[in-house]
Length: 254
Ligand code: IPE
Ligand code: IPE
Ligand code: MG
Image (cartoon, rainbow, N blue to C red):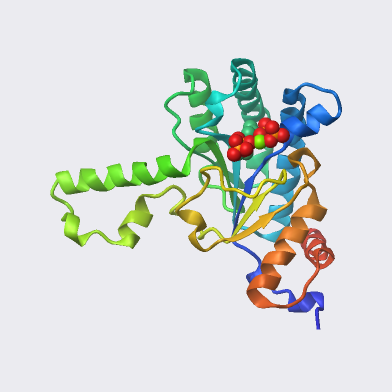
């Protein structure tokens, strides 16, 4: 009873987030500099976005740069920033063509003017797209997100719009990043480590967590579909396979 017909798209996660880890190790294993791994990782990003589109997953959130990643060697940080700018410029047209809305989530203030201008441009261009939302978490930290939400609420208290005793979880949730999107269902981490690294702390409260040793540049539809099958099975106990998830994606292309 695991026919593909039983795999109702409604049972798929609506919002998937990925901690894209392992680029540096992937490169080092082939005797290449770490940044080579970051460059290769862009292909995994493309593959993941297409797969989500095919499956009708509404939101994909990718952890590209954490608030702690500034501690890396200056050269790696500057290469990552350049890569971010280049990818933003080169990919936005394709995303737009595919009706994908792009959002950059995180504290954007430390980014240079050129990068910030490109972010605004890309977000504005794709703002009304409806096939799915791609959130890129850049200079993002889960604790920053929570503090930022608290600041928003404090402002309301100061303005007399809210009494601190009336504060509810729902009000807090409305100030948290990506509050306009489906709740996070599935959080994936590649690269073998079993930790959250200050990613979506609030949003992950009820998400299924799925970890793989696969390094990010090797992440493909096969691995992604295993993660989604694990989600479907944990939630619905259907006993579906990664192969069936891939068939579902294929059938939507037909
Ligand atoms: C993740 O890969 C990408 C970023 C943090 C930008 P890493 O660069 O952390 O790769 P490893 O974990 O060192 O292999
Ligand atoms: C998490 O990976 C951040 C991103 C994938 C952007 P890290 O490699 O920075 O995490 P830690 O330092 O191992 O926890
Ligand atoms: Mg890492």
